[in-house]
Image (tube, rainbow over all chains, first blue to last red; front, side, top):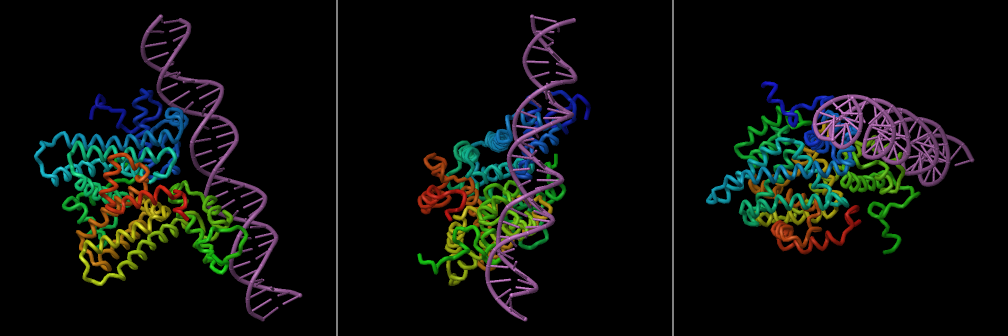
Length: 217
Length: 217
DNA sequence: TCTTGTAGTAATCAGTTGATTACATCAAGA
DNA sequence: TCTTGATGTAATCAACTGATTACTACAAGA
């Protein structure tokens, strides 16, 4: 890897460099998804996010205008990543796949995305805030945006979409609770095998080898 | 309602009464499930729990030996309620229902239980802590206990159980994000109708009429 | 009546946290 | 060169939070 390939957006954030606001913004959002995902909205401190992004706590707060606005931006970014991943997958559809093949392709895209535990958990945190004054409607909007992509762009029927999201939510919860860590328990093995099918073994290996905090980054 | 029917376990906790430790314990756990569910583990303060239970913050901390132990107890209680609700439902099985009827009965039992938003959200919070040192294994244990009841006691096949939990997780997420509040949006209406079937209208009414904080208590 | 164990609280404290302020550094245009 | 706007930080603060301590009040048995 030569120096010219250095990408400040994905590189481990170094201290003291002067970068454009856009790049910093993306770094901070990536850090925020990790920290908010792990510790929740209340438990995720702006200081922890700042340290993970390699900037000062004061800068994080000022750039986003407060903790709640930062969480909003972080959650919207996570939801947008799902939409983008689905749209990219759908763009490759020829139009004559069986519904089952379309849902399978979307499932694979989803799992590949939420290997980044920050994305997975930030979405989960968002969805558990439905009762919140300002964040509740954001949660519903984000979910419905994904739903519409699956229904309209991917062309799944309501019933097919429902089955897809059911499987997706179970997948999400099993990964959130790190069920692969319970491998060896007969019930856990059966459940994982049935949910992930042939990919189960691969996923167990992925999950075991990867540090929880940063999604392996 | 006569005075003799007064039940300190479910009655709004009054200040200054002297009750047995067992009763106080249940009151505090009920309060904890509401507060932890709403604000998450970090955001749920022992003070808010104490106020909701009608006791002092110091008493809450001392009775459970710390905030984490209180959360553990609260999460275990929520999971146990699911197990109990399923076992009660299963006890009424004659043994010759179709699998579809068994899963439907379990679904109804689950929805009736998680009308208490505290139970719903506390479980969700627990499951999103899979990476936590001590709470992660608790999350997996609790989920697997429910899974075993559905597989062994209810006698569902792995595939049937998988479909049941998929639907259950989607139900859980939709209720967590208060999707019924988005009624009127075509996508939301279709999604709710497809997920909850004929019960959808009833659920929308229930959710709309009920204060989020206390599950209607 | 006296004692003892249980239920319960007020007061307090040290650590944490989001936010603010004032200041420093640097690149680019005039 | 000088100014100006943007990037970025150190220092500080008020509010909050979990925990501890020392205390009170009451009920039941001896």
